[in-house]
Image (cartoon, rainbow over all chains, first blue to last red; front, side, top):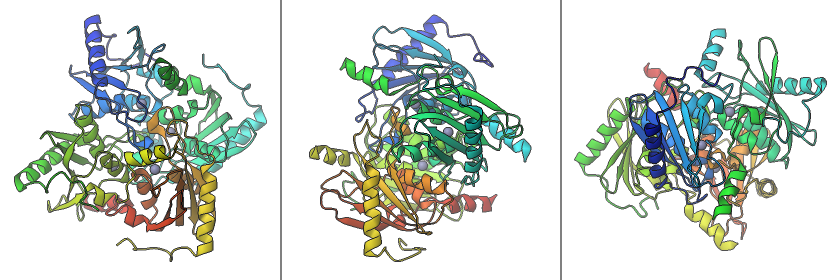
Length: 150
Length: 150
Length: 150
Length: 150
Ligand SMILES: [Zn+2]
Ligand SMILES: [Zn+2]
Ligand SMILES: [Zn+2]
Ligand SMILES: [Zn+2]
Protein backbone atom coordinates (compact mmCIF):
# COMPACT_ATOMS: atom_id res chain seq x y z
CA UNK A 1 0.00 0.00 0.00
CA UNK A 2 1.71 3.22 -1.18
CA UNK A 3 0.06 5.24 1.61
CA UNK A 4 1.04 2.85 4.41
CA UNK A 5 2.50 4.47 7.53
CA UNK A 6 2.63 7.97 6.07
CA UNK A 7 3.17 10.32 8.96
CA UNK A 8 1.05 13.09 7.54
CA UNK A 9 -1.00 14.53 4.69
CA UNK A 10 0.89 16.07 1.76
CA UNK A 11 2.50 19.35 2.71
CA UNK A 12 0.43 22.52 2.80
CA UNK A 13 0.99 24.70 -0.26
CA UNK A 14 3.34 27.23 1.33
CA UNK A 15 5.58 24.59 2.93
CA UNK A 16 5.68 22.61 -0.30
CA UNK A 17 6.72 25.73 -2.18
CA UNK A 18 9.41 26.51 0.36
CA UNK A 19 10.80 22.98 0.06
CA UNK A 20 10.90 23.23 -3.75
CA UNK A 21 12.57 26.61 -3.50
CA UNK A 22 15.26 25.10 -1.28
CA UNK A 23 15.75 22.23 -3.72
CA UNK A 24 16.25 24.71 -6.56
CA UNK A 25 18.86 26.60 -4.57
CA UNK A 26 20.59 23.33 -3.62
CA UNK A 27 21.09 22.58 -7.30
CA UNK A 28 23.39 25.57 -7.67
CA UNK A 29 26.20 23.82 -5.79
CA UNK A 30 26.04 20.67 -7.94
CA UNK A 31 29.48 19.21 -8.62
CA UNK A 32 28.75 17.50 -11.94
CA UNK A 33 31.66 18.13 -14.33
CA UNK A 34 31.14 14.75 -16.04
CA UNK A 35 27.40 14.55 -16.70
CA UNK A 36 26.78 18.29 -16.62
CA UNK A 37 23.40 17.19 -15.26
CA UNK A 38 22.64 19.21 -12.14
CA UNK A 39 20.26 17.91 -9.49
CA UNK A 40 19.10 19.50 -6.25
CA UNK A 41 17.13 18.10 -3.33
CA UNK A 42 15.64 19.44 -0.12
CA UNK A 43 14.68 17.10 2.69
CA UNK A 44 12.17 18.07 5.38
CA UNK A 45 12.52 16.31 8.73
CA UNK A 46 9.72 15.60 11.19
CA UNK A 47 11.38 18.13 13.46
CA UNK A 48 10.86 20.82 10.82
CA UNK A 49 14.41 21.26 9.57
CA UNK A 50 15.32 21.37 5.88
CA UNK A 51 18.55 19.83 4.54
CA UNK A 52 19.79 20.72 1.05
CA UNK A 53 21.69 18.33 -1.22
CA UNK A 54 23.21 18.41 -4.68
CA UNK A 55 24.75 15.67 -6.81
CA UNK A 56 28.49 15.13 -6.42
CA UNK A 57 30.34 13.24 -9.12
CA UNK A 58 33.77 11.62 -9.35
CA UNK A 59 36.18 10.83 -12.16
CA UNK A 60 35.44 7.20 -11.29
CA UNK A 61 31.77 7.44 -12.25
CA UNK A 62 30.56 4.78 -9.82
CA UNK A 63 31.55 6.94 -6.86
CA UNK A 64 28.97 9.62 -7.67
CA UNK A 65 26.55 10.44 -4.86
CA UNK A 66 23.16 11.82 -5.89
CA UNK A 67 21.50 14.96 -4.55
CA UNK A 68 18.90 12.97 -2.64
CA UNK A 69 21.41 10.83 -0.78
CA UNK A 70 23.52 13.88 -0.07
CA UNK A 71 20.53 15.49 1.64
CA UNK A 72 19.90 12.29 3.62
CA UNK A 73 23.41 11.81 4.96
CA UNK A 74 23.50 15.47 5.93
CA UNK A 75 20.37 15.00 7.99
CA UNK A 76 21.44 11.65 9.44
CA UNK A 77 24.81 13.03 10.48
CA UNK A 78 22.99 15.70 12.48
CA UNK A 79 20.92 13.10 14.30
CA UNK A 80 17.75 13.34 12.19
CA UNK A 81 16.14 10.02 11.27
CA UNK A 82 12.46 10.85 10.75
CA UNK A 83 11.41 12.45 7.51
CA UNK A 84 8.28 14.12 6.24
CA UNK A 85 9.02 14.99 2.60
CA UNK A 86 11.70 15.48 -0.02
CA UNK A 87 11.64 17.70 -3.13
CA UNK A 88 13.84 16.98 -6.15
CA UNK A 89 14.78 19.37 -8.95
CA UNK A 90 17.02 19.24 -12.04
CA UNK A 91 17.60 20.98 -15.36
CA UNK A 92 15.43 18.39 -17.08
CA UNK A 93 12.82 19.79 -19.42
CA UNK A 94 9.88 17.96 -21.01
CA UNK A 95 9.67 15.63 -18.03
CA UNK A 96 9.73 15.38 -14.25
CA UNK A 97 13.01 14.52 -12.57
CA UNK A 98 12.79 11.19 -10.80
CA UNK A 99 15.08 9.66 -8.18
CA UNK A 100 17.32 6.79 -9.27
CA UNK A 101 16.79 3.38 -7.74
CA UNK A 102 19.73 3.74 -5.38
CA UNK A 103 18.16 6.85 -3.86
CA UNK A 104 14.77 5.14 -3.59
CA UNK A 105 16.46 2.35 -1.65
CA UNK A 106 18.09 4.90 0.63
CA UNK A 107 14.71 6.58 1.17
CA UNK A 108 12.78 3.45 2.12
CA UNK A 109 15.24 2.59 4.87
CA UNK A 110 13.49 5.30 6.87
CA UNK A 111 9.85 4.55 6.11
CA UNK A 112 7.23 6.20 3.98
CA UNK A 113 6.85 9.92 3.30
CA UNK A 114 6.15 12.38 0.48
CA UNK A 115 8.30 12.90 -2.60
CA UNK A 116 7.87 15.97 -4.82
CA UNK A 117 9.23 15.63 -8.36
CA UNK A 118 9.67 18.97 -10.10
CA UNK A 119 9.70 19.68 -13.83
CA UNK A 120 12.17 22.41 -14.62
CA UNK A 121 10.44 24.15 -17.54
CA UNK A 122 6.93 24.49 -16.14
CA UNK A 123 7.71 24.00 -12.42
CA UNK A 124 4.82 21.52 -12.36
CA UNK A 125 5.07 19.08 -9.47
CA UNK A 126 4.32 15.38 -9.27
CA UNK A 127 3.53 14.21 -5.72
CA UNK A 128 4.34 10.59 -4.87
CA UNK A 129 5.12 8.51 -1.80
CA UNK A 130 8.33 6.58 -1.20
CA UNK A 131 6.45 3.27 -1.28
CA UNK A 132 4.88 4.19 -4.61
CA UNK A 133 8.35 4.72 -6.07
CA UNK A 134 9.78 1.46 -4.74
CA UNK A 135 6.97 -1.08 -4.37
CA UNK A 136 7.76 -4.40 -2.63
CA UNK A 137 10.81 -2.71 -1.23
CA UNK A 138 13.63 -4.50 0.52
CA UNK A 139 13.83 -3.00 4.01
CA UNK A 140 15.44 -3.57 7.41
CA UNK A 141 12.50 -5.86 8.20
CA UNK A 142 13.65 -8.32 5.55
CA UNK A 143 16.94 -8.80 7.35
CA UNK A 144 14.99 -9.39 10.55
CA UNK A 145 12.71 -11.95 8.95
CA UNK A 146 15.80 -13.83 7.98
CA UNK A 147 17.09 -13.66 11.53
CA UNK A 148 13.85 -15.20 12.77
CA UNK A 149 14.63 -18.27 10.75
CA UNK A 150 18.11 -18.92 12.13
CA UNK B 1 2.76 1.39 -18.06
CA UNK B 2 4.39 -1.61 -16.35
CA UNK B 3 3.95 -3.78 -19.48
CA UNK B 4 5.43 -1.23 -21.90
CA UNK B 5 7.94 -2.59 -24.38
CA UNK B 6 8.05 -6.08 -22.90
CA UNK B 7 9.72 -8.29 -25.44
CA UNK B 8 7.62 -11.34 -24.70
CA UNK B 9 5.00 -13.07 -22.60
CA UNK B 10 6.07 -14.42 -19.19
CA UNK B 11 8.27 -17.49 -19.55
CA UNK B 12 6.73 -20.89 -20.21
CA UNK B 13 6.59 -23.02 -17.07
CA UNK B 14 9.59 -25.22 -17.83
CA UNK B 15 11.88 -22.31 -18.71
CA UNK B 16 10.75 -20.39 -15.63
CA UNK B 17 11.54 -23.41 -13.47
CA UNK B 18 14.95 -23.80 -15.05
CA UNK B 19 15.74 -20.14 -14.40
CA UNK B 20 14.71 -20.44 -10.75
CA UNK B 21 16.77 -23.60 -10.40
CA UNK B 22 19.80 -21.72 -11.74
CA UNK B 23 19.18 -18.86 -9.30
CA UNK B 24 19.09 -21.32 -6.42
CA UNK B 25 22.38 -22.84 -7.48
CA UNK B 26 23.91 -19.38 -7.92
CA UNK B 27 23.17 -18.64 -4.27
CA UNK B 28 25.58 -21.34 -3.15
CA UNK B 29 28.61 -19.23 -4.11
CA UNK B 30 27.42 -16.17 -2.18
CA UNK B 31 30.28 -14.29 -0.51
CA UNK B 32 28.37 -12.75 2.40
CA UNK B 33 30.46 -13.07 5.56
CA UNK B 34 29.05 -9.82 6.97
CA UNK B 35 25.30 -10.07 6.45
CA UNK B 36 25.19 -13.86 6.24
CA UNK B 37 22.27 -13.16 3.91
CA UNK B 38 22.76 -15.21 0.75
CA UNK B 39 21.15 -14.14 -2.52
CA UNK B 40 21.24 -15.79 -5.93
CA UNK B 41 20.10 -14.58 -9.35
CA UNK B 42 19.83 -16.03 -12.82
CA UNK B 43 19.50 -13.77 -15.84
CA UNK B 44 18.09 -14.99 -19.15
CA UNK B 45 19.22 -13.13 -22.26
CA UNK B 46 17.24 -12.72 -25.47
CA UNK B 47 19.82 -14.99 -27.09
CA UNK B 48 18.83 -17.78 -24.68
CA UNK B 49 21.86 -17.80 -22.39
CA UNK B 50 21.60 -17.87 -18.60
CA UNK B 51 24.05 -15.99 -16.36
CA UNK B 52 24.27 -16.79 -12.66
CA UNK B 53 25.09 -14.23 -9.96
CA UNK B 54 25.47 -14.20 -6.19
CA UNK B 55 25.94 -11.33 -3.74
CA UNK B 56 29.53 -10.33 -2.99
CA UNK B 57 30.23 -8.28 0.11
CA UNK B 58 33.21 -6.26 1.34
CA UNK B 59 34.53 -5.23 4.74
CA UNK B 60 33.66 -1.70 3.63
CA UNK B 61 29.93 -2.41 3.43
CA UNK B 62 29.22 0.14 0.69
CA UNK B 63 31.29 -1.84 -1.79
CA UNK B 64 28.93 -4.82 -1.75
CA UNK B 65 27.60 -5.89 -5.15
CA UNK B 66 24.25 -7.68 -5.18
CA UNK B 67 23.48 -10.98 -6.89
CA UNK B 68 21.36 -9.29 -9.56
CA UNK B 69 24.05 -6.81 -10.60
CA UNK B 70 26.63 -9.58 -10.57
CA UNK B 71 24.51 -11.49 -13.09
CA UNK B 72 24.14 -8.35 -15.22
CA UNK B 73 27.81 -7.43 -15.42
CA UNK B 74 28.64 -11.04 -16.26
CA UNK B 75 26.25 -10.91 -19.19
CA UNK B 76 27.30 -7.42 -20.30
CA UNK B 77 30.97 -8.35 -20.23
CA UNK B 78 30.19 -11.19 -22.64
CA UNK B 79 28.46 -8.84 -25.05
CA UNK B 80 24.85 -9.49 -24.01
CA UNK B 81 22.66 -6.40 -23.70
CA UNK B 82 19.12 -7.69 -24.30
CA UNK B 83 17.34 -9.46 -21.52
CA UNK B 84 14.20 -11.52 -21.22
CA UNK B 85 13.88 -12.37 -17.52
CA UNK B 86 15.67 -12.59 -14.20
CA UNK B 87 14.93 -14.86 -11.22
CA UNK B 88 16.00 -13.94 -7.68
CA UNK B 89 16.32 -16.24 -4.67
CA UNK B 90 17.47 -15.91 -1.07
CA UNK B 91 17.21 -17.62 2.32
CA UNK B 92 14.34 -15.35 3.25
CA UNK B 93 11.31 -17.11 4.69
CA UNK B 94 7.83 -15.68 5.27
CA UNK B 95 8.28 -13.32 2.33
CA UNK B 96 9.45 -13.00 -1.27
CA UNK B 97 12.96 -11.72 -1.87
CA UNK B 98 12.90 -8.40 -3.69
CA UNK B 99 15.67 -6.56 -5.51
CA UNK B 100 17.11 -3.46 -3.83
CA UNK B 101 16.67 -0.11 -5.52
CA UNK B 102 20.22 -0.06 -6.87
CA UNK B 103 19.56 -3.30 -8.72
CA UNK B 104 16.23 -2.02 -10.04
CA UNK B 105 18.09 0.99 -11.43
CA UNK B 106 20.62 -1.30 -13.05
CA UNK B 107 17.80 -3.36 -14.58
CA UNK B 108 15.89 -0.48 -16.12
CA UNK B 109 18.97 0.73 -18.00
CA UNK B 110 18.24 -2.13 -20.40
CA UNK B 111 14.49 -1.84 -20.80
CA UNK B 112 11.55 -3.84 -19.53
CA UNK B 113 11.43 -7.59 -18.94
CA UNK B 114 10.22 -10.16 -16.43
CA UNK B 115 11.35 -10.48 -12.83
CA UNK B 116 10.64 -13.63 -10.79
CA UNK B 117 10.81 -13.20 -7.02
CA UNK B 118 11.09 -16.49 -5.16
CA UNK B 119 10.06 -17.26 -1.59
CA UNK B 120 12.46 -19.70 -0.03
CA UNK B 121 10.16 -21.69 2.25
CA UNK B 122 7.31 -22.42 -0.16
CA UNK B 123 9.12 -21.77 -3.46
CA UNK B 124 6.12 -19.66 -4.45
CA UNK B 125 6.95 -17.15 -7.18
CA UNK B 126 5.86 -13.56 -7.66
CA UNK B 127 6.06 -12.42 -11.30
CA UNK B 128 6.65 -8.70 -11.92
CA UNK B 129 8.07 -6.49 -14.64
CA UNK B 130 11.06 -4.18 -14.27
CA UNK B 131 8.85 -1.13 -14.82
CA UNK B 132 6.47 -2.29 -12.11
CA UNK B 133 9.36 -2.43 -9.66
CA UNK B 134 10.73 1.01 -10.54
CA UNK B 135 7.87 3.19 -11.81
CA UNK B 136 8.74 6.61 -13.29
CA UNK B 137 12.26 5.33 -13.67
CA UNK B 138 15.26 7.47 -14.48
CA UNK B 139 16.68 6.08 -17.72
CA UNK B 140 19.17 6.89 -20.48
CA UNK B 141 16.36 8.83 -22.16
CA UNK B 142 16.34 11.37 -19.35
CA UNK B 143 19.94 12.27 -20.06
CA UNK B 144 19.02 12.67 -23.72
CA UNK B 145 16.07 14.90 -22.96
CA UNK B 146 18.47 17.11 -21.13
CA UNK B 147 20.81 17.14 -24.10
CA UNK B 148 17.95 18.26 -26.33
CA UNK B 149 17.67 21.37 -24.24
CA UNK B 150 21.30 22.46 -24.47
CA UNK C 1 55.09 12.20 -4.80
CA UNK C 2 52.88 11.94 -1.67
CA UNK C 3 53.59 15.59 -0.75
CA UNK C 4 52.78 17.00 -4.20
CA UNK C 5 50.56 20.07 -4.25
CA UNK C 6 49.88 20.07 -0.54
CA UNK C 7 48.41 23.42 0.30
CA UNK C 8 50.04 23.68 3.71
CA UNK C 9 52.08 22.10 6.47
CA UNK C 10 50.36 19.63 8.79
CA UNK C 11 47.90 21.35 11.12
CA UNK C 12 49.16 23.11 14.24
CA UNK C 13 48.57 21.05 17.37
CA UNK C 14 45.51 22.91 18.63
CA UNK C 15 43.72 22.83 15.26
CA UNK C 16 44.55 19.14 14.81
CA UNK C 17 43.11 18.40 18.24
CA UNK C 18 39.98 20.38 17.49
CA UNK C 19 39.49 18.45 14.25
CA UNK C 20 39.89 15.12 16.02
CA UNK C 21 37.47 16.22 18.71
CA UNK C 22 34.91 17.06 16.03
CA UNK C 23 35.44 13.66 14.39
CA UNK C 24 34.82 11.93 17.72
CA UNK C 25 31.58 13.85 18.19
CA UNK C 26 30.52 13.08 14.63
CA UNK C 27 30.75 9.36 15.40
CA UNK C 28 27.91 9.63 17.90
CA UNK C 29 25.32 10.03 15.13
CA UNK C 30 26.51 6.96 13.22
CA UNK C 31 23.64 5.00 11.68
CA UNK C 32 25.22 1.54 11.64
CA UNK C 33 22.64 -1.02 12.76
CA UNK C 34 24.15 -3.71 10.51
CA UNK C 35 27.89 -3.52 11.13
CA UNK C 36 27.62 -1.89 14.56
CA UNK C 37 30.94 -0.33 13.52
CA UNK C 38 30.75 3.40 14.17
CA UNK C 39 32.94 5.84 12.23
CA UNK C 40 33.21 9.62 12.49
CA UNK C 41 34.99 12.15 10.31
CA UNK C 42 35.65 15.88 10.41
CA UNK C 43 36.68 17.73 7.28
CA UNK C 44 38.48 21.08 7.42
CA UNK C 45 38.05 23.35 4.40
CA UNK C 46 40.55 25.92 3.15
CA UNK C 47 38.02 28.54 4.23
CA UNK C 48 38.31 27.30 7.82
CA UNK C 49 34.96 25.53 8.21
CA UNK C 50 34.63 22.05 9.70
CA UNK C 51 32.07 19.54 8.42
CA UNK C 52 31.18 16.46 10.47
CA UNK C 53 30.23 13.10 8.97
CA UNK C 54 29.27 9.67 10.26
CA UNK C 55 28.73 6.38 8.45
CA UNK C 56 25.18 5.66 7.25
CA UNK C 57 24.21 2.11 6.40
CA UNK C 58 21.32 0.52 4.53
CA UNK C 59 19.61 -2.85 4.62
CA UNK C 60 21.02 -3.27 1.12
CA UNK C 61 24.63 -3.20 2.27
CA UNK C 62 26.04 -1.74 -0.96
CA UNK C 63 24.16 1.51 -0.37
CA UNK C 64 26.16 2.36 2.75
CA UNK C 65 27.89 5.76 2.69
CA UNK C 66 31.00 6.11 4.85
CA UNK C 67 31.68 8.88 7.36
CA UNK C 68 34.36 10.44 5.17
CA UNK C 69 32.14 10.72 2.10
CA UNK C 70 29.31 12.04 4.24
CA UNK C 71 31.58 14.86 5.40
CA UNK C 72 32.62 15.58 1.81
CA UNK C 73 29.14 15.79 0.30
CA UNK C 74 28.08 18.03 3.18
CA UNK C 75 30.90 20.41 2.36
CA UNK C 76 30.42 20.21 -1.40
CA UNK C 77 26.71 20.89 -1.10
CA UNK C 78 27.54 24.09 0.74
CA UNK C 79 29.87 25.21 -2.03
CA UNK C 80 33.18 24.15 -0.47
CA UNK C 81 35.60 22.44 -2.85
CA UNK C 82 39.04 23.12 -1.33
CA UNK C 83 40.17 21.05 1.59
CA UNK C 84 42.98 21.24 4.09
CA UNK C 85 42.63 18.15 6.28
CA UNK C 86 40.31 15.36 7.40
CA UNK C 87 40.34 13.42 10.68
CA UNK C 88 38.83 9.94 10.98
CA UNK C 89 37.80 8.10 14.14
CA UNK C 90 36.14 4.78 14.97
CA UNK C 91 35.68 2.32 17.82
CA UNK C 92 38.61 0.30 16.54
CA UNK C 93 41.18 -0.64 19.17
CA UNK C 94 44.66 -2.08 18.62
CA UNK C 95 44.94 -0.27 15.31
CA UNK C 96 44.36 3.02 13.50
CA UNK C 97 41.15 3.44 11.55
CA UNK C 98 41.85 3.82 7.86
CA UNK C 99 39.60 5.08 5.06
CA UNK C 100 38.24 2.50 2.60
CA UNK C 101 39.30 2.71 -1.03
CA UNK C 102 36.04 4.32 -2.11
CA UNK C 103 36.63 7.20 0.27
CA UNK C 104 40.23 7.57 -0.86
CA UNK C 105 38.95 7.88 -4.42
CA UNK C 106 36.48 10.51 -3.30
CA UNK C 107 39.26 12.40 -1.52
CA UNK C 108 41.70 12.51 -4.44
CA UNK C 109 39.10 14.09 -6.73
CA UNK C 110 39.88 17.31 -4.87
CA UNK C 111 43.68 17.17 -4.69
CA UNK C 112 46.14 16.46 -1.92
CA UNK C 113 45.76 17.35 1.75
CA UNK C 114 46.29 15.90 5.23
CA UNK C 115 44.56 12.85 6.65
CA UNK C 116 44.62 12.11 10.39
CA UNK C 117 43.90 8.50 11.36
CA UNK C 118 42.99 8.09 15.02
CA UNK C 119 43.37 5.01 17.19
CA UNK C 120 40.51 4.76 19.63
CA UNK C 121 42.19 3.22 22.65
CA UNK C 122 45.28 5.40 22.87
CA UNK C 123 44.10 8.36 20.79
CA UNK C 124 47.42 8.15 18.96
CA UNK C 125 47.29 9.74 15.54
CA UNK C 126 48.83 8.70 12.24
CA UNK C 127 49.31 11.61 9.82
CA UNK C 128 49.23 10.82 6.11
CA UNK C 129 48.50 12.63 2.85
CA UNK C 130 45.76 11.72 0.39
CA UNK C 131 48.33 10.81 -2.27
CA UNK C 132 50.13 8.52 0.17
CA UNK C 133 46.89 6.64 0.74
CA UNK C 134 46.04 6.27 -2.95
CA UNK C 135 49.29 6.29 -4.97
CA UNK C 136 49.02 6.42 -8.78
CA UNK C 137 45.49 7.63 -8.31
CA UNK C 138 42.92 7.89 -11.05
CA UNK C 139 41.87 11.53 -11.17
CA UNK C 140 39.95 14.00 -13.32
CA UNK C 141 43.17 14.52 -15.29
CA UNK C 142 43.04 10.95 -16.57
CA UNK C 143 39.72 11.63 -18.24
CA UNK C 144 41.27 14.71 -19.83
CA UNK C 145 44.29 12.81 -21.08
CA UNK C 146 41.92 10.49 -22.81
CA UNK C 147 40.12 13.42 -24.39
CA UNK C 148 43.41 14.70 -25.76
CA UNK C 149 43.68 11.56 -27.78
CA UNK C 150 40.27 11.74 -29.48
CA UNK D 1 54.80 -4.14 3.54
CA UNK D 2 53.65 -4.10 -0.12
CA UNK D 3 55.03 -7.61 -0.71
CA UNK D 4 53.40 -9.17 2.35
CA UNK D 5 51.66 -12.49 1.78
CA UNK D 6 52.12 -12.50 -1.97
CA UNK D 7 51.40 -16.00 -3.15
CA UNK D 8 54.02 -15.98 -5.88
CA UNK D 9 56.61 -14.14 -7.92
CA UNK D 10 55.38 -11.83 -10.71
CA UNK D 11 53.97 -13.80 -13.64
CA UNK D 12 56.33 -15.33 -16.20
CA UNK D 13 56.48 -13.31 -19.41
CA UNK D 14 54.18 -15.50 -21.50
CA UNK D 15 51.47 -15.71 -18.84
CA UNK D 16 51.67 -11.95 -18.23
CA UNK D 17 51.27 -11.33 -21.95
CA UNK D 18 48.30 -13.67 -22.15
CA UNK D 19 46.62 -11.89 -19.24
CA UNK D 20 47.14 -8.50 -20.87
CA UNK D 21 45.81 -9.84 -24.15
CA UNK D 22 42.67 -11.02 -22.36
CA UNK D 23 42.27 -7.62 -20.71
CA UNK D 24 42.49 -5.92 -24.10
CA UNK D 25 39.79 -8.19 -25.51
CA UNK D 26 37.62 -7.63 -22.44
CA UNK D 27 37.62 -3.91 -23.17
CA UNK D 28 35.74 -4.47 -26.41
CA UNK D 29 32.50 -5.22 -24.57
CA UNK D 30 32.67 -2.07 -22.43
CA UNK D 31 29.25 -0.51 -21.88
CA UNK D 32 30.31 3.12 -21.42
CA UNK D 33 27.91 5.37 -23.33
CA UNK D 34 28.31 8.18 -20.78
CA UNK D 35 32.07 8.46 -20.23
CA UNK D 36 33.06 6.88 -23.54
CA UNK D 37 36.05 5.70 -21.51
CA UNK D 38 36.51 1.98 -22.12
CA UNK D 39 38.29 -0.20 -19.56
CA UNK D 40 39.08 -3.91 -19.66
CA UNK D 41 40.40 -6.26 -16.99
CA UNK D 42 41.51 -9.87 -16.80
CA UNK D 43 41.77 -11.65 -13.49
CA UNK D 44 43.90 -14.75 -13.01
CA UNK D 45 42.86 -17.11 -10.20
CA UNK D 46 45.15 -19.38 -8.21
CA UNK D 47 43.41 -22.27 -9.96
CA UNK D 48 44.64 -20.93 -13.31
CA UNK D 49 41.38 -19.58 -14.74
CA UNK D 50 41.09 -16.13 -16.33
CA UNK D 51 37.97 -13.98 -15.92
CA UNK D 52 37.39 -11.00 -18.21
CA UNK D 53 35.63 -7.80 -17.15
CA UNK D 54 34.69 -4.49 -18.74
CA UNK D 55 33.23 -1.32 -17.23
CA UNK D 56 29.44 -1.07 -17.18
CA UNK D 57 27.84 2.32 -16.73
CA UNK D 58 24.35 3.51 -15.86
CA UNK D 59 22.35 6.65 -16.54
CA UNK D 60 22.55 7.17 -12.78
CA UNK D 61 26.33 7.56 -12.77
CA UNK D 62 26.85 6.23 -9.25
CA UNK D 63 25.64 2.79 -10.32
CA UNK D 64 28.58 2.24 -12.66
CA UNK D 65 30.61 -0.92 -12.01
CA UNK D 66 34.24 -0.85 -13.12
CA UNK D 67 36.00 -3.46 -15.25
CA UNK D 68 38.04 -4.72 -12.32
CA UNK D 69 35.05 -5.33 -10.06
CA UNK D 70 33.19 -6.95 -12.94
CA UNK D 71 36.03 -9.45 -13.30
CA UNK D 72 35.99 -10.10 -9.56
CA UNK D 73 32.28 -10.78 -9.18
CA UNK D 74 32.42 -13.06 -12.19
CA UNK D 75 35.13 -15.11 -10.51
CA UNK D 76 33.50 -15.03 -7.08
CA UNK D 77 30.16 -16.16 -8.48
CA UNK D 78 31.91 -19.21 -9.93
CA UNK D 79 33.39 -20.09 -6.55
CA UNK D 80 36.87 -18.59 -7.04
CA UNK D 81 38.24 -16.64 -4.08
CA UNK D 82 42.01 -16.87 -4.45
CA UNK D 83 43.73 -14.63 -6.94
CA UNK D 84 47.17 -14.43 -8.45
CA UNK D 85 47.13 -11.35 -10.70
CA UNK D 86 44.94 -8.84 -12.54
CA UNK D 87 45.74 -6.86 -15.69
CA UNK D 88 43.97 -3.57 -16.49
CA UNK D 89 43.73 -1.82 -19.85
CA UNK D 90 42.03 1.29 -21.21
CA UNK D 91 42.17 3.73 -24.10
CA UNK D 92 44.31 6.07 -22.03
CA UNK D 93 47.41 7.38 -23.75
CA UNK D 94 50.37 9.23 -22.19
CA UNK D 95 49.82 7.38 -18.94
CA UNK D 96 49.13 4.01 -17.33
CA UNK D 97 45.56 3.16 -16.45
CA UNK D 98 45.14 2.80 -12.71
CA UNK D 99 42.31 1.23 -10.72
CA UNK D 100 39.97 3.57 -8.84
CA UNK D 101 39.89 3.41 -5.06
CA UNK D 102 36.67 1.41 -4.99
CA UNK D 103 38.30 -1.33 -7.03
CA UNK D 104 41.42 -1.27 -4.84
CA UNK D 105 39.15 -1.81 -1.84
CA UNK D 106 37.45 -4.71 -3.60
CA UNK D 107 40.87 -6.21 -4.41
CA UNK D 108 42.30 -6.06 -0.89
CA UNK D 109 39.34 -8.00 0.52
CA UNK D 110 41.03 -11.06 -0.95
CA UNK D 111 44.65 -10.45 0.04
CA UNK D 112 47.73 -9.41 -1.86
CA UNK D 113 48.60 -10.27 -5.47
CA UNK D 114 49.99 -8.70 -8.63
CA UNK D 115 48.43 -5.84 -10.58
CA UNK D 116 49.53 -5.03 -14.13
CA UNK D 117 48.71 -1.53 -15.33
CA UNK D 118 48.91 -1.16 -19.11
CA UNK D 119 49.56 2.00 -21.12
CA UNK D 120 47.56 1.92 -24.31
CA UNK D 121 49.90 3.72 -26.71
CA UNK D 122 53.15 1.93 -25.95
CA UNK D 123 51.76 -1.18 -24.27
CA UNK D 124 54.30 -0.61 -21.51
CA UNK D 125 53.34 -2.28 -18.26
CA UNK D 126 53.66 -1.11 -14.67
CA UNK D 127 53.74 -3.99 -12.16
CA UNK D 128 52.42 -3.30 -8.67
CA UNK D 129 50.96 -5.23 -5.75
CA UNK D 130 47.51 -4.71 -4.27
CA UNK D 131 49.02 -3.54 -0.97
CA UNK D 132 51.18 -1.01 -2.79
CA UNK D 133 48.07 0.48 -4.35
CA UNK D 134 46.11 0.68 -1.11
CA UNK D 135 48.54 1.02 1.80
CA UNK D 136 47.16 0.77 5.36
CA UNK D 137 44.10 -0.85 3.85
CA UNK D 138 40.87 -1.45 5.68
CA UNK D 139 40.28 -5.20 5.54
CA UNK D 140 38.13 -7.95 7.06
CA UNK D 141 40.65 -8.09 9.92
CA UNK D 142 39.68 -4.59 11.02
CA UNK D 143 36.12 -5.71 11.61
CA UNK D 144 37.49 -8.62 13.64
CA UNK D 145 39.72 -6.37 15.72
CA UNK D 146 36.65 -4.45 16.62
CA UNK D 147 34.89 -7.66 17.61
CA UNK D 148 37.77 -8.46 19.93
CA UNK D 149 36.93 -5.38 21.89
CA UNK D 150 33.26 -6.16 22.49
ZN1 LIG E 1 20.06 8.77 -7.10
ZN1 LIG F 1 20.59 -5.04 -5.03
ZN1 LIG G 1 34.85 4.56 3.06
ZN1 LIG H 1 37.14 1.12 -10.29
